[in-house]
Length: 99
Image (cartoon, rainbow, N blue to C red; front, top):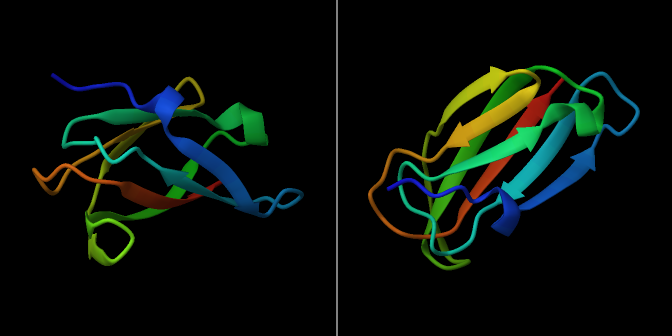
């Protein structure tokens, strides 16, 4: 069953605080698996759209990284990132551009 990782994930604005485009880094806990998800309230950063996302799974914590594509959807200014691409359990890190 898919787990909501929103409260256990780290979300940090890394650039663009006063710009049209902003970049977030999102890191899930090491227990994350495919179909788990993270919800991001875009209005917290004065945004309403997802523009770009790229992610990796840590196949060996903080050492071996493999690109992995999540599924995304924006509904009512909330970005939902659903983990996918691998059945492995591990940390996922996503770089997300929002506007």
